[in-house]
Figure 1 (cartoon, rainbow, N blue to C red):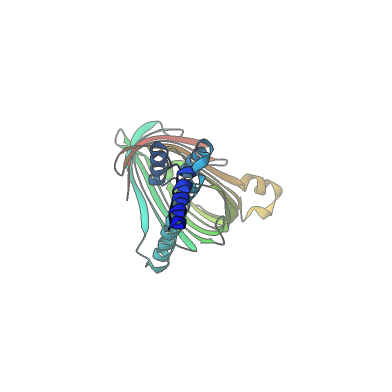
Figure 2: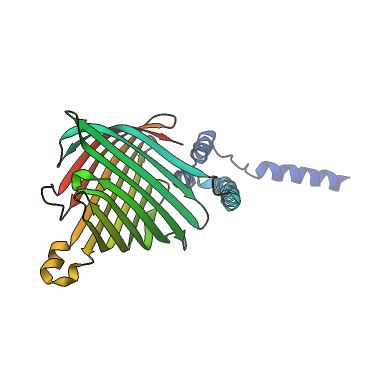
Length: 316
């Protein structure tokens, strides 16, 4: 009887002498929950690091919250992968539609209308990109710009960064002196940086180009293609992008003499800088500036054209 009483007393004393485990302060917990809700992994890791530093007695609870977050993210990634694997060709496409106006300098200095569309399908091992753009303007009853381009580019992913690309492109720009230009290319690409807010990718490979000039002359060229894509999400509602590319081509008939090789060498450069500002929902405003340069355009044509565009973009 006495032993039972002493045992009970000791247990009670031990319970009184053992310090209670402090719960994670509600403001800290709310801060971690808010970071998790944002969906940004970098924010979650940064907040967790600060929370551990300022609350060393609650590291175990913080680690438990982080473990739950990582488990849920893994389940979401697994579900997304399964969805990609099971999706048909016409499923899981994303895209943008763009409509606006532009101001050009170079072969013409006028205002005009601009429109474009971009479609992307991202599968497990494959990615397919399609984009098309048209610029049109008239001045004093005459068409002063009638530019059209369309590009389709399939990618095969070797891993998370390295990929092979194929490219087929059609262009028409009578102001630059050609009624049609066809380019096919294939090579390798590499994503140097890829995070939730930043992407930098490069690609390069051989190409073959056929140009039908407005004069009726046709020319085929062996070429080399290089490209760069840069996207930066500055804030939740602001994004900057930079796309640049060049095609260095040599006339296939240029073997006739050294002079012919020099005269027939041609390089095409194009660079577009754009700033997107989200307006409401899927609608954004885009301001972009494009430089197009031909090192050896037809006689009477300027080498450089620029276009300043202001447009509305709808994501779907």
